[in-house]
Each structure stands twice: as structure tokens, then as C-alpha cells.
Length: 80
Ligand SMILES: [Zn+2]
Image (cartoon, rainbow, N blue to C red; front, side, top):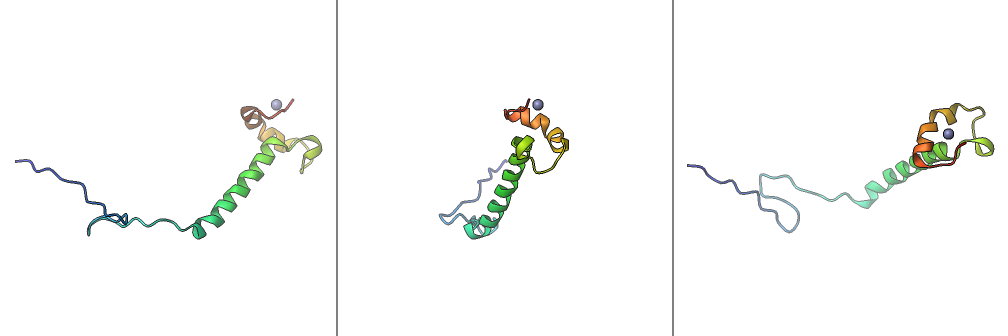
């Protein structure tokens, strides 16, 4: 005889029964430094893909431009 297994009941606080794991929300104070760090990293990456060329270039030469050239065309930045 087959028995049906019911999913564990979830209480209004987001916790499950005594055998389940508790779900605790991440506080904004813990996430904010990582969000700022990743956002800054993405802005630097966006700069190198989109504007590291010609008068706005940080590094002389075309090495950075050649490394991100396909990404530049993929994202629709003007190139050549
Ligand atoms: Zn190009």
C-alpha cells in the first residue's frame, strides 16, 4: 500500500517544520558592500569594452581594444 508524502508545512515566518531548514533573509547591510564592489567592477569592465579607445584610452596601444573587440561589436558600441 502506497503512502503519500506531504510536503513540510511552511509557517508564516518562512521556517519549515522541525526537520526542515530555516530560511533567513539576507540583511541589506551584508549585501550592500558586495553589490557596490560588483557594480564598480562591472562599470570598469563596461568602460574597457565601450570606451577604451583613442582619446579616452588609459593604456597606450591597441591591446585592450583587440581583447574586447568582439564584445564591443556584440554590445553595439561604435568601433570602426
Ligand atoms: Zn570593430
